[in-house]
Length: 129
Image 1: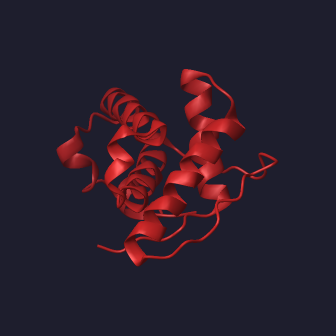
Image 2: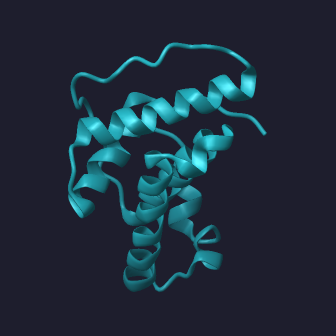
């Protein structure tokens, strides 16, 4: 498996949209997601890159629920290398957001988890922003 550090825009978009649904501080959530992402890449490649904190929210992208679901899944994949991942706040944030988005996609698009990837919206959406 490979891993890379997601862009600030990617992480801020996920954190911002998460906070719209569940509440919380966008910068705190973004920094937690970013820290776990760096930790995963460090673990995967046996590096020791420093974890800097975001100080401003910065640019976010407006996405439909399917495109948002896809970048949440990407961030989960890029952040899961370290064994402590499943005990992290980032894990809880991304998993709860994924479940929420699956419900919204089912209601709005009539797609269940098994059929999302075959949809045109999913195929056209970027993995990373």
